[in-house]
Length: 335
Image 1 (cartoon, one colour):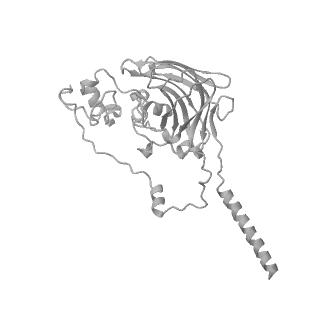
Image 2 (cartoon, rainbow, N blue to C red):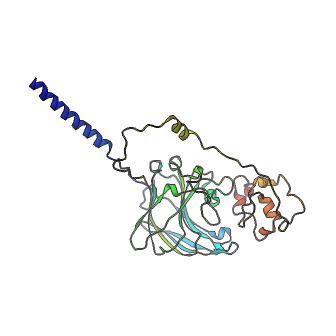
Image 3 (cartoon, rainbow, N blue to C red):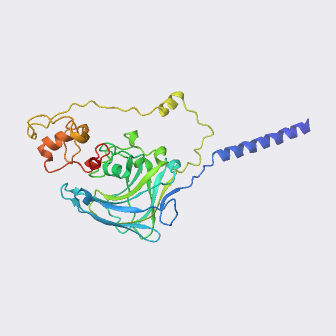
């Protein structure tokens, strides 16, 4: 009996040690490595050619340059007001290409290794194109014009100091719904799930852009790398088993329902209307399909673009919206 008892105690101690080891393993977080997206070290998968683009393409006067040093890139210039808008323009540097799969970092952040001699500049932004029909077009339209979804933008700031800084920009702060005039979000990811930069999007990035936008001033930004950094798990947060209710699983699997608001077209009110009759229907090049007045002055959302440009004297100082004729549903220059 004594021998049997002795073996029972040993068995219990062994079982306890096994359980302790299992629990210890289960609660030890798995640290996922960051995913380099852009570097300047010659690595084929992460070395991309950046091209500078400034607001003179839309009548602005901002100026900027992009240059490459041995281990980093430099955006330098000045953002000034666009005369026709009386609002700040932009300068930016953009790189297209095939980028590493960053889906595993979707709950984390984009990390920029940067430094700046103008840390006081208030208009630094970064954008990532993914799922865009045409990335340059999407990164000009910000989802405000047809077929321009898929360019996700977020703000960031650079600390003062001569050394390199790792600036973290949470992926949850990106949105592909923003104003092409100001760069400001028109809808946040928290307000509209369709504007979020998801794991699926991060798996196939198409374009990376650095912006100085929406604020006047001198700009000098040096970029050493861009990486996708997974969220750091809490040391005690890893569960052994996660159970979701059928209702929760169904809700997660269900696609977001698209809602379409009914629209009744209206003409400009009497003090502003300049047309004697309604705008002609079925205008060429798909212009009649533009049901929103995407012009840089506040107008009723019920005015179509044709009504706003042709018949509303509040827009007399403006022509068609920026990049309208390059839109994929119009493509005037290809006809």
